[in-house]
Image (cartoon, rainbow, N blue to C red):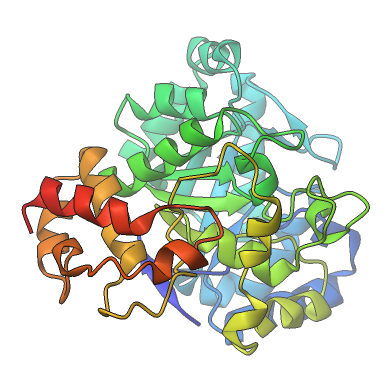
Length: 364
């Protein structure tokens, strides 16, 4: 397993975590088996916005004795009064649900308490007006909630809430479909979405990725907006290559699903390569470096993706990015303009020209 650190909280988070969307549909025995298999293979992060209330008891059964080694993101606004998922900003309901979730999870604290599924300005206003935000922040003051998170599908709304400076983790839907304006939750332009990811990286806000397969649509050529299917491993790698991303949270039902996810660490790099996107790159993506490193190897040994990333982060306000750039072994000024990267970039970035621009910006 590989881990990435949330700069604000210091937590080391497995790059593949657990989504809980439909695990409640399986039996307790199968669910506990799957959860323990994930844990034994290094997965230490789980999202608990689940489809059914049974999930919390499953997690309590699996991890009560291992709780300190697991990181949970629990959603303040997810409502399971009927046994199935619902959404609410009613304060009394939120309080009852949080108490019930903690009881079923057999824990007395939440690692990441999430402002749940705020996609419109009116949602955010209701969350504040009804006292849910105040309750969540009070729970943090009391130590019941260790860190504050935000779940949204809307980059504009995300930026609005992030401006308040108390969010330490963002749950956002990232996949090639949504990023290039295809799908139910494809909110915001490609540029707006990429700027949000860079903002999170610059400010040390970790991103946990939901819907990496666009609800399965990207995995089937009949439903893929590109007319071609991607594999789950290409989708996972795509999300992990975005600025700010700490972990991808695919939904699992059973041990078989967990084993399929863990194959990500066993398969060769070419099976994770999403260069196929270059054959149907939408106009919104043309000319934008996404740090995929398909341009490698560089004849001058430049890490072209990382150079672009530090440049973008510095432009986004990350005061440390310039120092990170200068510590690289090779800099943009070392580019010999051989054109190798220009020819290989699936997103048609003219990297040899970009290196001149970056060298001028950083002075080296």
